[in-house]
Image (cartoon, rainbow, N blue to C red; front, side):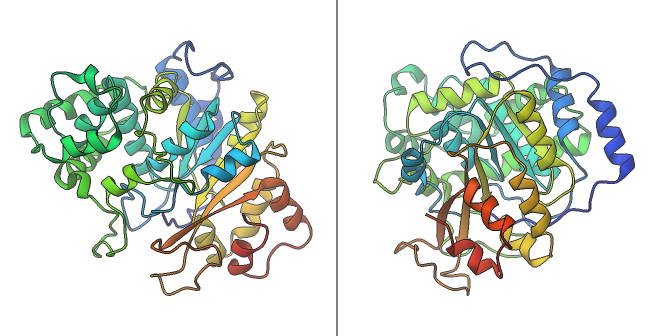
Length: 381
């Protein structure tokens, strides 16, 4: 994933956000199961309070282009990364990190309002789906099988192979989109006619592309090495274990429970902006939670280029943390004209890296980094 910097929040915009925060959301510290659902106004108010004015990026980022996205999970287990508050960027790869870490609250921050809309679509799909098979069928506009319960213990290979053989169904897709839009409106997040059209456009793209869908940018086709949705769902961690959030029913159900409790919160914001990341940190402090993981994808590459990295580094260093808190980042070198990372794996054009937030903050305090290459090669596992 790549992202560009948004304009700084204006005093008027921040005042509006503060006004929206008059009714604060209750604590989210309880476990995913058994947590009472917040009211629509509380969920929408939390999003407004944490968000800042959005910006532009030249792709919809419907799915990840990081085939290596699951490689850090073994390192996360070794470091004891568990619970707390998860922060991440981009689309549904976040759900796999959430399923592995089991946080008590998660924030998905992205410059584009469209990413918020896509995550509201995902939230609606989780609400409407009984299991992984149901979810994948509704997501891709395929009529689910009648014997849904019998698929609970089936592998993701079996589920995806069945779905891959099914044709898209226009009537089912239309009905599903009506249900998705209705469910999104129930969240209380203001939804314009254009927003609803955007959600339908995103869903149409998944229906048309199916499991062959790849990451694309406007006016540029997908690169040959970009993974398909099928490949992302079947990808494994560094130990060879399948680890996407759709690989096992209990992982899917954990994320579904988080969504039902309004504890996966999409936020409009720039990681190097003046408001959103700092506001998320304050929200975690109010809940007496520490950051478990901050997934940045390769956003740091872009904010390094535009000169806003120091502000990002200061915001990260100020987040509530402990010795288990980490940054998960992606580096693109091979296939992108850049240097091949020392930790690159054969057959992968992205490399996932893990750094403790303590190490990051200490390096930032002691003068920081002289280059982006230094950032991705020093202190990373």
